[in-house]
Length: 461
Image (cartoon, helix red, strand yellow):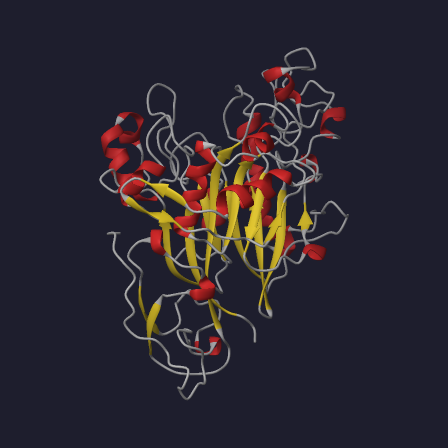
């Protein structure tokens, strides 16, 4: 996508027959679209050239030429994103401490990326959890809410998310058990992390943060942090070299499926509800022949496929004990770093395919970038053996020796009843001034790239 400015080609006048507000886009009724259609409503959309200049939806300057003029329902063009921002630290409270200032270079880079893409809803993976939500408050106040400069580019514009969600995660929660079977229960460092319910050096490390411009229905949020792995029918529980179960009964009675957590977060958009299905499955590596992390990663992803399928969701229970999956007519978007590429890398049995092939998931567009292709070509190494399209890559990993190279592991997957207008990965080419925000190793922000999708949905009015 070339850089440029937003140009107003045509606005819908407030004096029109539809009595709309100036600049408000108008769409034909949802009923004019076939059930479960992935088509975009019949409008000609003039895309803004850079995501860097996108204003908030409340003052949205995406200009359309209206093909038909109706009053009901009122459409919403929603930008939804996921970003593994690597905003984790090595000790509890360290992230909160860093965010009390306004000069943490990594946090500035992360904030600039978010400000220039301007998503309406964004899941941030690897954002350390604290019970009071202080780190999330500070990130909003000290980084997202202020403008930042970048040499050669216009300053980024502040963005405010009045609604946010932080919840406990399993990473760093001590199990008191020898889960990695090294003969001892770890007490410090990586030994402690390997025996925690999810790999982490302290409770809350590598947590999740959801930010939204629209209200969150907190009373109906469902979390699945305590669902036991063994309670999933046909779970890929690992076995040791002697073909005996890797985990004993006491360990299975304590080990959850989710390495962090799985969230179902209803977001209220007018009279409509969009369910954000958020997670961050464990990487399928850092284990042995038993493949305990690869198997857990597979089943953490499979959870969402089951959750979307009523007959397969009967075993599921949330942290309040409520059973079952998502309603068959619910709109949703799956967000997160799933740590699984559809074709390449070390995942077990390609679990991303369980979602990409699910009949309820819209895969009519795949987020892409020119920067991913450029880095694939320039870095070479293990990237040259990949089967996947490098335009779809979302993470810049090492590409020599046993390292996997660049992969597509971060996903924004909407439900089939939602139309996708656009889908991109924020990965500029090196000759773009915004490349400074992503860079190459050591990365200014993260080794992952922000992924976003624009969705067309009516607000249910």
